[in-house]
Length: 212
Image (cartoon, rainbow, N blue to C red; front, side, top):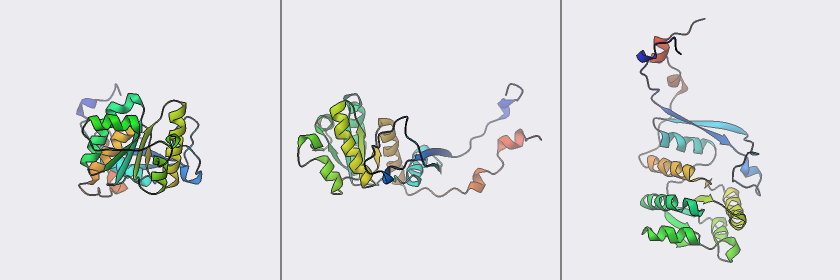
């Protein structure tokens, strides 16, 4: 690179690409959707769009975890994520989502003035959020577990979501990206981008032609 006059290179690809792993949770009903180092994907997909939110949404759709445009979101997060979760709940409420949450998360969200329905964890008896998910009353799950008790409850929540094919997000960064992607789809679905256009000769190729 030191031998190349990169000062002449001023080019943007004009698109954003997001790669997503395809994980076989659907084949293993008792599997935990919480990712770990032992997870192995069965393939990869890519979403390409003019901006990151749209590309992220495309990647999720291609991976079989398409994001809902509305409905009900369930949120249960660790204490360290509650500040971010309240902002996320407010954004999703603005998009028309009904918000469900477990006790501590619901309390934090309510303080922000966002309407929220408190749901019991499985360990707290019935009716609870797992029953609500299994009954088809939840369209999106956001769960960042911590501790042994929360991990056990979280496992049941994520298992129920996975069994019904409901998108289940386990990090706040992923939840934020999902919210942006949902908002982006409100303007209409992005058009497919032909691979021929992506591989067309760019300014960089013309400035620095490949040599044999």
